[in-house]
Amino acid sequence: MASSPPKDAADSRLSITEENRHQYFETAVASVRDADREIRQAEARGRARLLREAEMKEKFKRGLLAALVVLGVAAIAVAVWLARR
Image 1 (spheres, rainbow, N blue to C red):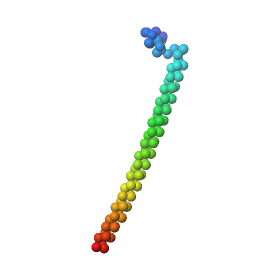
Image 2: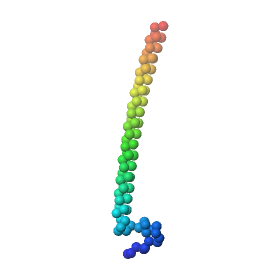
Image 3: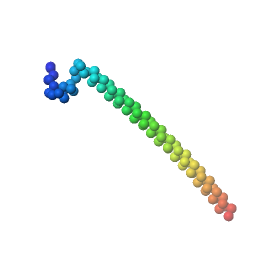
Image 4: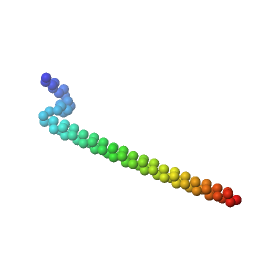
């Protein structure tokens, strides 16, 4: 089954021929490499975001614990002060 000839100059530039087949192949390979690089970068950003979130949660927990300790010490101090009055 023979393919129909190109309709105009633009179509002929877009047609894959023996002469330009390597260009299409190189373009496809470059596109795959670019996509792969972008995927790796997105994964790295995602991992970095997860690490930042975990670090923020840990800092929040430590801060909350410190606040509870300070509140407990203050409550004991007030209780002792009231008991001595």
